[in-house]
Length: 145
Image (cartoon, rainbow, N blue to C red):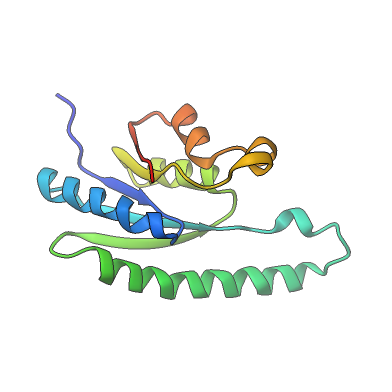
């Protein structure tokens, strides 16, 4: 029988993230499984060739990650209680980083929102949730706004 021992809650700190967190908390309590909350900051590596010094990009990404770590702490305090929960800020392409982290941490279920890019942005860049659903080897629970 399949057992869910580790849950990942992938968030972007938008208003939708609190709704996603509520499902993660509910399942965590029901299944007695810890939750790992994950946020992925953009790496901005695609801008290295645009006459922007790599050190400037690295410093900017470092500031984004530092700010995201503070936001993560607040997010966990506001949205989770009475469960085993930890937060992690990653940097890179969201879908790729989420899938890699899920494999490294033996995640059994990914919970995430489906909102995000719309219109031409979605056509050009695609949906993170869609990429994860198509590529994940574990179940993915998507929450619509």
